[in-house]
Image (cartoon, rainbow, N blue to C red):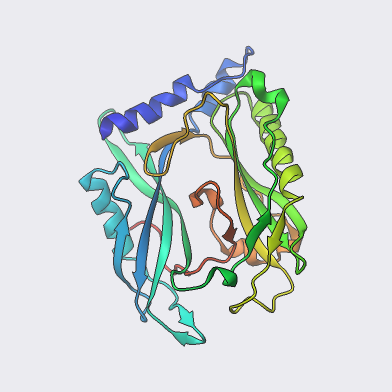
Length: 287
């Protein structure tokens, strides 16, 4: 397993780099890259808000020590009790978490949980949530092909009662390449514009059941991944390396809701996720 982490960290040295003479600036940005794994699983939250059970993806490339670390962190979590029809209820919810490896010295690594996402109760019908009705796949920006740029855009959307996109913005763009500050900013902006251009045209099914059915609009997140056709896709449960982008929270139409939720980078690619999670964590992510 150490070999997997070392390989992920070594990717920093082999990540596509935009060609110019600013070697020092690129090297500085390469140091910002992190080795991480997206881990999926489930939690059972008791009526007292404590975690009664949990499971992690059996295929995730975690050592027993890593699983023990995550398990200990989860055992210390406390949630706001989940309610069903206004009554506190025991709940089994889907979970994804972002595990990050930090090199503490030449031989050792430390780990931390950098982000989490908790879905709705498994028993809830899909009609309780916003769903995609019509989608148009974003086109890879042609101007970035020569740079072999790749990354993921986390979009924030406000969906109206007619299922159209009322407002949309890019919350964060993580890149799988290094360059100068200006180059990486340009690449992030280009990916964000391409994602927004496509997703703005999408149509959605608003909730028709559940507690949010009477809302005037709904806030959701949509990850959009851009990659070269030759790039091997890294599935959840595997170590990968990327350079996190700055997070934008200046969306007046989102109100205060965005200020009370965590970073979007614990969201698996390809899904649509309510901004307000299905379970509210009250304690720190890691001990």
